[in-house]
Image 1 (cartoon, rainbow, N blue to C red):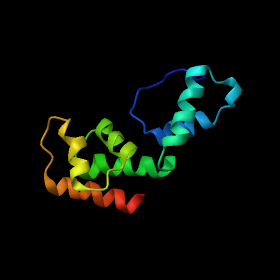
Image 2: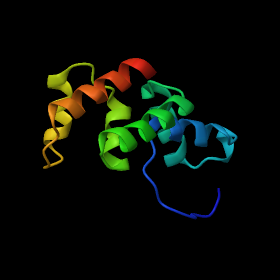
Image 3: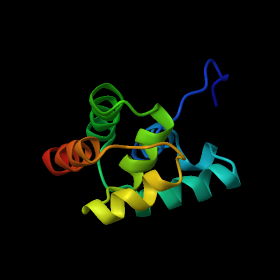
Length: 108
């Protein structure tokens, strides 16, 4: 495996892409479990996930970590989306939430 150069929030789709580059036999047990999990639960390909994450940060004024949470779960209704944003302990206006839902619908 490679040396850590920087830390950044990535979606499970991006994790799947990264771990998929390695021979499964070269992965340790935790990495294999992680690859198995992300293979089952990733909902987008990595390119779609990256694009969506960037759109959320740029257009909806949320952090990269918050964007990753939305990309990983892809809520489809306002109440579902509010359930995630409620935990962020900051006010997200309805206009921003609706913009997030629009981005999800356009990219998934």
